[in-house]
Each structure stands twice: as structure tokens, then as C-alpha cells.
Image (tube, rainbow, N blue to C red; front, side, top):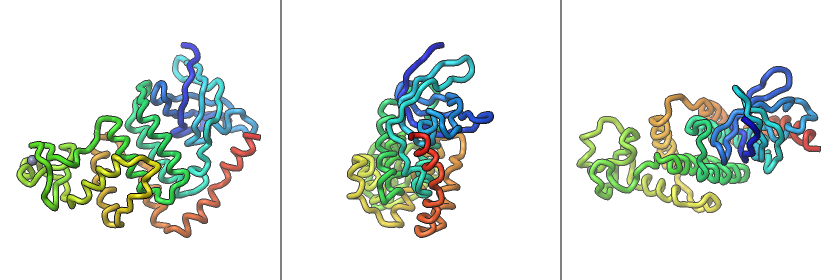
Length: 273
Ligand SMILES: [Zn+2]
């Protein structure tokens, strides 16, 4: 027990009592940490800005027997665009839920921490949120040791050259034609998709704009990464429903909803003054 310092992102918040919040943080030092931010829902709270979802801050945390408590917090970046715009919020919620689902408490992942900072920075500004999220999914899998194998058959190690290839989530990647019979299930994809996934894995976040997959290639990448992720999780990712509902609205409605979703940003501004 005692105090510890941690730099982290707010992955999610839950109201507690009259004015408190429980923050789930992803920290550089300790991985996932849950801590109570006392009085954080009061308009004049000094913890108001740092206890908004997606906020990036430095936290001083008091270790309690059952629950930790945020003693002090300093905002590094509010990532306000991720809360103000409904599309950005939907995609960022998905990213936060993935981290929450994959990372355990008190298990630091320093490389993943840097990736999250890159992903939030990217998603606060990009016009191609979808590719930003595909990029994050691949980096997350890579950092946690679940990188899908796209270049060589996972069974025999041979390089894949056939125009179509079987992607098999349970096997961890692609299978060549000769090995396909060994594994039931999986989904057949064009070889070009595997090459695009390798490029996406190797491209820095700041240069993602150079990748422009076709709409149908995007759908295939989305579904194969979804299958790969789902195979490694024991729970459903709820924010996908929000993402799909938001997508069905279309771009114009997105903007209108994004403007409506501005209230918590006003609250945050008030808190910072
Ligand atoms: Zn093979």
C-alpha cells in the first residue's frame, strides 16, 4: 500500500455514488488499473478533465485494500475530438474496449502503450477512421504476440504464392493449398489481402494515408481481423454494435450527431478554467 505514479489513458468510466467515478486506466507502468476519482462528476472538480474517457494524463494513485483512489492528476492530452465527434467516439470506444479486453491488471505493456498513444493521436485527426482502426487491430495483435501470419503457411512454412489463400484464425494465419485439408473452417481470401495486411502492419501511423484499399478489400480485412480477434477473446466486443449502428446512419447524420455530442466537451472546458 502507498502512493504510485502512473501515466495512462482512461479506457472507460463508471459512475459511483453521488459524484464519484471509477476509472479504468491503461497505464504505462502497471497495465490496466481501476481507481476511484472522488468528486470527479462535480463541475468544479480538479479531476474533471482527467477523468473523461480517452483522456491521457499523469496520475498519482493511492493504493487501497480493495480499490485504488486517484489522489492527483495532471492532463497531458484531453483527446477531445474523440468525444466530440460521434464517428471518432465510436471507433475510439472500440479501441478502448479492445485494450480493456486484451490487457490484464498490473501487467505492463510498454510497447502497446506507445501504440495506443499513436492510435488516439491518429484517430483524433484522420479522415479515414476505418483504416486507423484496422492499423490498431494489427499493431495490438502484434504487440501481444498474436500477430497473424500472412506470408507463410502456418502448417508447413512454405511461402504462399497461389492467388487465393485460406485464412484460419484458430491456426493463427494463412494455410497453403496443400495444407488446407488439415484444417476445417477458415475463410478463403485473395493473396492481395494478405499483402495489404503486411503493409498495414509495417506502415507507421503517420503514413497511413498512402494506403487506399478498395471498399471490398476493406470489408475482407475487417472480417478476417474480427475473426482473428474473436478467436483470442472470451467475451464479445460490445462497442461493435455502436460502430455498426453509427455506420448505418451515413456521413451527413454523423456530423449532425457529432455536434450534438459536444456537451461533455463543454463540461470539460468549464472544468479546466
Ligand atoms: Zn502448407
